[in-house]
Each structure stands twice: as C-alpha cells, then as structure tokens.
Image (cartoon, rainbow, N blue to C red; front, top):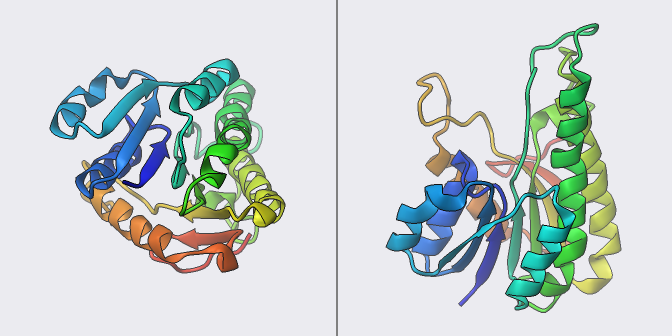
Length: 224
C-alpha cells in the first residue's frame, strides 16, 4: 500500500487530495488544524489517519513524523495562507505578510527537512509543494499582493534548492500551481476535484529527471 502525507487536508484542495488517494487505496496521513471536519471522510475511508498539525508548530510537526515513522511515498505540502491579494503599494498588511511567509515558506521547508528521511525510505520518493502562479517573478505584470507573491516566490526558491540538495537521495521535488479553484464560484474554471485529478496525473508522471520543475495543474511549465 502506498502512503501519502497531506498538509492542509481540511481545505478544499487538501481534502480532495485526501479523498482521491484514499479512494485509490492509498494510506493517507491527513494533517491540518481542526481535523474534526474530516470525520465523515475518515468514516468512509478507514485508511485515512487524521492528525492535528499546524505546519508552523515545529515541535508538533516533528512529533507527527516520529509518530508515523514509516516510509512515505509522497508528501504533499498544501497548507497555505493568503490575504490582501488586491492590496497595492502603500497598503501592505505587514502582520499578514509575516504570517504568509511563516506558513507559505518557512513551514513547508521545515516540513520537508523533517519528513525527507521517511520519503527516502519509500519507493516513490516524491515531495510536492502547492505553489502559485503569483509566485512567478517573470509573470508578474500587475503588481500588488506583496506578501503573497513574496511568500510563494520564496517557496519556489526553496523548492529549487531542495531539488538540488535531495537529488543524491533520490527524492524528486515539484512545485505545482492548482489553478483558480472553487466549488461555489460559477466563474471558477476548476472545481477542487478537477484540479486535484489533473495534479495527481502530473504527480504520477513526473520523476527524478524533472525534479525542480514549476508546473501548472495541466502539466504546462511555468517560469520562475
């Protein structure tokens, strides 16, 4: 049985990753804050283990890794935070800025450093980070959103470095943009289920030869 760890599993995308992998027979370690919301999903799929874990609580992250202590084929770093996407120069919320960096950048890096030994023990050896198109410096033509853009651009820099540093350990690293996703907004081009289905196809296909890539949910490359 393949195993996957998902952070932010109680959000739209994380919940869908959890559901789809469990439905395909994977053992899923679903982590997040307020995991009681996954009770119904856990009842439907006994292979889901719901674990309370805040990615900014380093002690808890390390505790969960010690608790799992088995090979992880795949780690999906999905937990994220954003506000003030439309904020312009002069209106930056610096408390939110710091919080976004803490959750979107520092948390995923610590997660990777903590769980890499378990991933290395597996057959798949893959680590996926849910990034964002807004983290692309090359594609920024509208400005604004300083905190979110900076946190995701910094995450991308970490992902690129990890792809180099983990190469000799056989761990493939990938940055994925999920697209504009909503299950309630009729204008959204993708539902959570559709986005995750596409991303799982990319995750299944990519390998060590493509480590360090930044891709759209549909496998199209994105510039850094």
